[in-house]
Length: 380
Image (cartoon, rainbow, N blue to C red; front, side, top):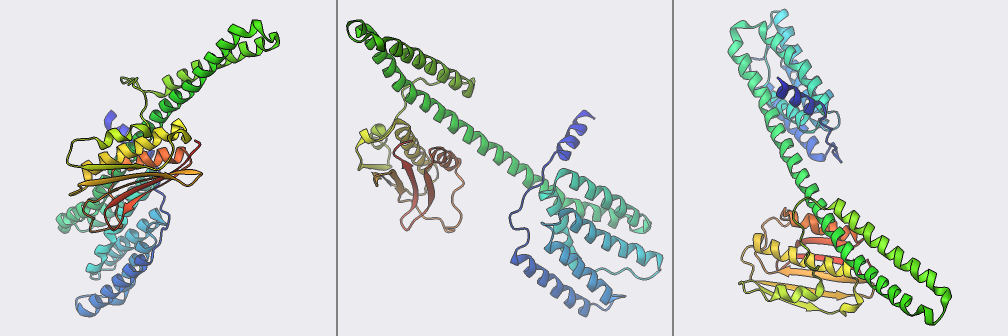
């Protein structure tokens, strides 16, 4: 019972999925197809009691399908209430109840409701339709088997929509986790960079304190304040880093930068890696250098995992005066569908890192293979 209550609470708390363009041109194309098929069916079937009426009902259902993403609950309720009311009216008027096979398109509506609507709208929709459906079917006790089968058919797209929704939530959580991990790594790199500079400040301040008695006495308090402030900043930075890190083991090895990229090229695997650096390393801040290494490292990892028949990787690092230009290109087999890039989670982490440094990131197919490009400001 507690588990059922928990599932119900989770369903109530489900947020609505935003759809940027709720009505597309292909929705109207689907409307035209449904109405055309319905018109052909009404002309071909001779058993229809009121072909004009059932055709109008099919048009109403088709319109509901067109607006299903804009009016998720309303379109579902209107379509199924119209169809069930038609069946109930036929029974009470003692006339044949006929429905077009084209009405099967209506199964798109429970799928859309369950896939994109909020939890509350899903509950309201099925709380109205399912009892009404059972009531209408109850007036035909001789068709109880067909009624139960129809209920199963009605709920099947709901199960499919729930599976898609669960998959999307799992992927979303994984993407968020990857971004958090990347931010944690950046926080550590920030700590190392700031610690390096602050340590220098502390040493300089201590040196100044050692000789100040022999020179200008007025600078002694200022230098002492510099030392205290630098120590405080270092302690606070370490405290922030401790809060950001997880409880997993921490790697205290020095962070690797552009100067370490040659080690990636020295790999003995079959994948040949050429690294060309056309920039003075002294012109690059540490955070940019760290980011550059991580992007190249992650790109090469992705190539090893996902690229088909890749034997060569070219890494080119240059600059245009204001920003570092980074390009990683392989010679792997090009995908048949160039509009769908590989869904490697490493791309998410790389894009997050570049965005934090206020740079530009892109990845996609070229005429010779897969390419990752990044533009990072020389001063982070």
